[in-house]
Image 1 (cartoon, helix red, strand yellow):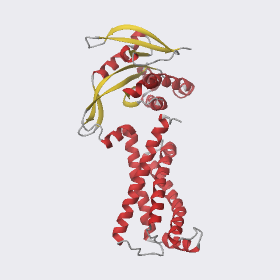
Image 2 (cartoon, one colour):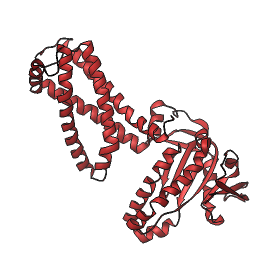
Image 3 (cartoon, helix red, strand yellow):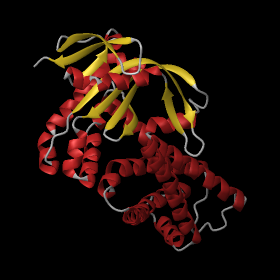
Image 4 (cartoon, helix red, strand yellow):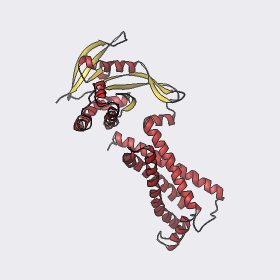
Length: 365
């Protein structure tokens, strides 16, 4: 059974939490062992680091990190996402302190029972637990957990702002030196955006854009697309060439986004009094990809294909269609019968000498 692109992405977002927590846990254990000379100075409260305890602690910390990642990404971000930053931080800190207290109540007795080789319910285990709760080691453990939490949330925040794929490329150094690669681009622009903005006002229009872009997320992820840029009411989506060609992902993404807006048309009318629509242009070609910037680093694409795609999208109004695709890209796709194509001939592009052959596509009803 093949894992869906969305599931792969979610797994990729959660796993770093487990890795961060495991590495921090090992580092803190190493520091403690060095500081104590591998001697347990308070055996009535502190658990000795035997090989079995070390394995249990490593597994527990990694699983705890994964659990924090899951809770943070799929629950807390939704619960506290609309609050101010100060309220969000205060609420999350309170939640996690209670959460960690429950975790320690569950895990410490198990670790102590492993060390003492008795049942977790044995009185010696709970006597040791009581001593540990009032010891400095308890506060040290809580501090370690909060430090791990801080690092993982810091990672998560950067990842959400840069984009998971972009952050991964920064870490791996894939684009530290510029490379040439073949990519597909789709420039997508909201129709009548100026009129909509004037009618709604700045604040309501901004909320519309947030909702509009959010409703595209599943279509982009499920078709292996990557958001390159948001430019006002325009979004630029990119694919590695093979990902975009496979199963016609680049074109399927366009129609999946249209379907998403259509399903939510009633909600848009209720909240904003308008249902947004869009037009798009698609093309492919070689680009140079690399990191750029001194004050703020970004991974950018440069190449003629971006200008060409933008100009193709700009011709949608002239042809009175919602999507235009270069024939060069169309020739690489293998469309099923449900798609109807119409060749529009060669068209000159603004500011360019050569012409480009264009095709528009619709789906059979």
